[in-house]
Image (cartoon, rainbow, N blue to C red):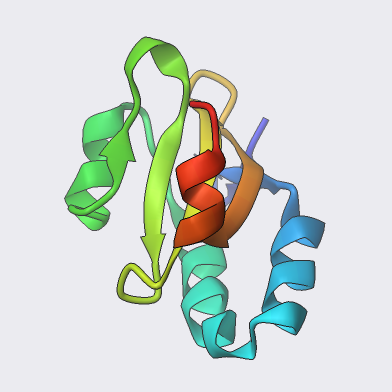
Length: 105
């Protein structure tokens, strides 16, 4: 389950180590990821619409394949899967546009 704060269950982030590794390799993403992580840890996403309300440019993939976030003004992309029922956000991969173009979604 997600993290409980004052009786409210927020999202649990899985795959933080991928983000830390990416931030070390791409220091220009540090602030964006720090803010995104804070948002996720406070979020109470119940549906894809909740994500779109905060991240309008996020792409919700069909058939529960996940969500693509535009990172740092669309300089990079991040693929996550969200289990709304259990409050889990799983980081699948992060990459630049060349890498993103090779992802099979």
